[in-house]
Length: 77
Image (cartoon, rainbow, N blue to C red):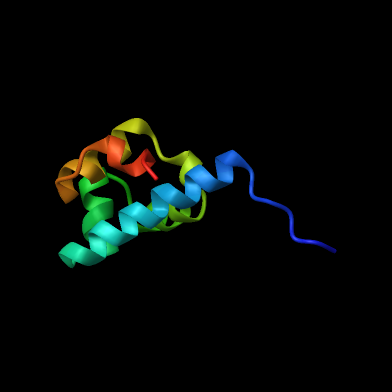
């Protein structure tokens, strides 16, 4: 069966996680610190990374503030 093209939502979700992972790795920030910054548990953070559409705007904003990047950076290609 041929591989289907990813939907725009899946592409957006992959972009969000890729950007968070990139900036976290660049700054040496562990996932537990990101979870703490977002005010969520580490388990919830892992769940959100698997399905980024579940992140709330507040959680993304807190993560971006912690990483010192504008939230709009997560959505730019």
